[in-house]
Amino acid sequence: GVGVQHALPLAGELSRAAVRLRAVVPKLRAKGAARAVELVLSHDALAPSTLDFMSDRAARRLCDRLVSLGAVRELTGRDTFRLYGI
Image 1 (cartoon, one colour):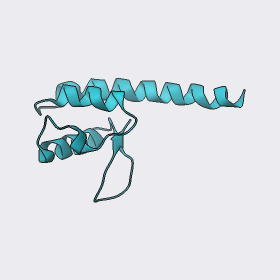
Image 2 (tube, one colour; image 1 turned 30 degrees about the vertical axis):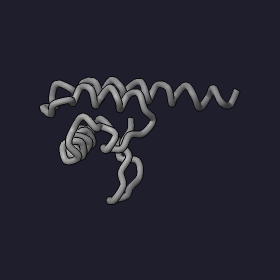
Image 3 (cartoon, rainbow, N blue to C red; image 1 turned 90 degrees about the horizontal axis):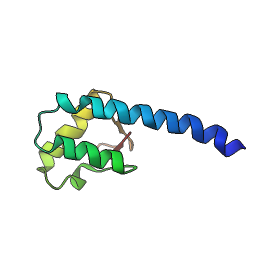
């Protein structure tokens, strides 16, 4: 059906995005980065404040670094409140 025609390409895209995200973990130096990546992978969207095991600044910088590496996308397009996801 029509749903399957849309779901299969999306599933492939999400799978490739997850592989890209896991591949950048060795490039991340922040403490808790691997844990943060697993949280991103387990949620549709994630605010840096969700990473409560990191300081606010460290969480924001990690998310910005993941965007610069092409591993995640910023989903809101806003400066004041940001959500990240694959």
